[in-house]
Length: 499
Image (cartoon, rainbow, N blue to C red; front, side):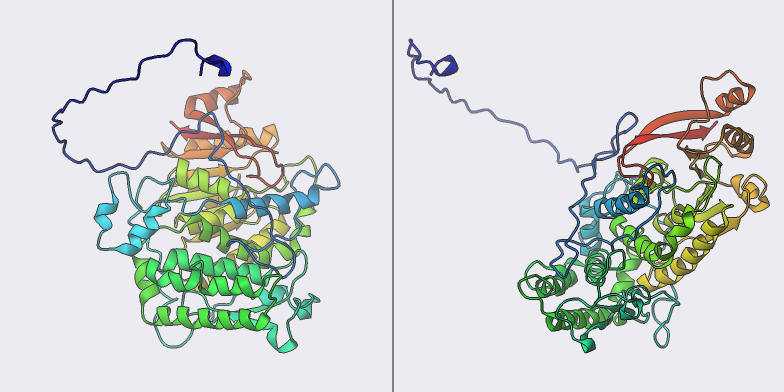
């Protein structure tokens, strides 16, 4: 055929093929090297696609994700729908967080080095983002394994938040004696109590349990052991999904599968398998980090989130959150923090980033907040965080929360001199406060990185700007949409490195 489907007027001769034998010298095999993380200096981070939310009734759940977020309040309300914005952003952050963002190996490692260790090879396959191996990070919580008897951390049980006692309706098909259930975690700790109830803006027991099973199998178990937990055909998770589907609605089958899961996991804990596997790894996948943080938030902040609406508009005392994927991006992928470093959050709100740094990095993590309600919620989160980390069998870094003005708090001023990374969400700070921060940053050590949502270096010809220009090298980035609580749009942020 000719161009545009016309018949060709000339017929070409059939092609002839000439065959020649060529000897190609063999080359020595070269082990592949993982590709470095691409720079995102002038673009968004990796595209994050949030899955559609699951049905709000007893139905199959297609994947592991954290419990739904109760209504939350935007830090910058401007319309009647702002109180729902934080809920949407947090939900998108949880469902869209890429699994295993930090990696186990550095850029010189290859799978060949793990031939004798199928657990570490399996974990390596899903890793992205971190190029360095933090061999100093020890994940196993010493109090969560071994010893005599069952540990009983003081957690807020899911049943304390969502239950018949809190006026939540029982799920369809459940008898009164089938509502109360318990869930085993990968440790020697007592099980968490749930009830098979459902109500909007409360903890979804079925969804939460499926997410727990997924994270347990992917983080704590080998391929062989995980099949019984998450295999697509006959695993505990698959049996539960089938039992809660619209077609079956079999609460007894769900409970039977949960009992089998509890028994099997406890056996792996008691024979040392879980602790041994934890000793082999040096990071937590982002999916597990997000689930733990969401569990903590749902049990402490979410029931009292309306407290965060009480601030003076136009002042420095406003509230906004950086969501889990954004924090992972800046702490793991960009600043590449390690467990022997120090993180400081100036204006730490309810402590979300402070505890995420302690969990995901394992570093010493400090925060300072002056709004009383936010401080109270932050302390509640920190208590639940410590207990829930033991429940999951993981050891976080130390968390230190301070009350008051970070410009005059002696402990924060002292720790700033040791800080490796400082976060200041100065999106709504006044120019006076931002200028005060520049004077504080004169004491930072060389190489310390400051994450901010406004640049401290600008075009205004002022003395304080000349100081900022002289002490900082500034890089400009854009964060992805749905990465902050106050807007669904993308935006700017800056990393300033102390010269």
